[in-house]
Image (tube, rainbow, N blue to C red; front, side):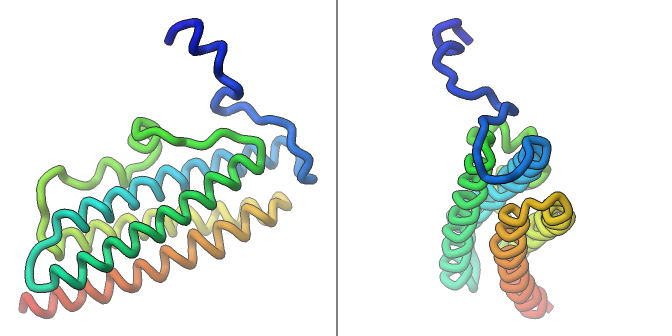
Length: 181
């Protein structure tokens, strides 16, 4: 990186700016770290949904094509909420593909090739479970530290949306499995 680019950085990743929202910097730093992890997962699952949307095939093509696109758009909205919360806390968000690959196992789990609909559904179900297994303890930790805004965001948007998406994907996977018998 050239010296000219370094001088134009307003805030380095990992640094917090002072914001007057009634939370100590240690609490804000913990929440920023947790939210960036969830953001990386959410960015990865968003991309997995778009990949599935583009590459789905088979008897349920139309139905899954639409569902994958709907879930993609809902994950984009979750991403935006997470990123805005990170900024509200005075942090800097992950924003680049390299950040997602380094932070989220979801980004490294999907093959490059085209998968069957059942394999796509199973991979998405695994990704949702990864997010949910990490989100719940992060929500509790935020609540324990008095960061009600982060707790509310994680519970009301990340957990609830991913539970719903997981249910939809699980039902489609069950139908795929039954049809294959």
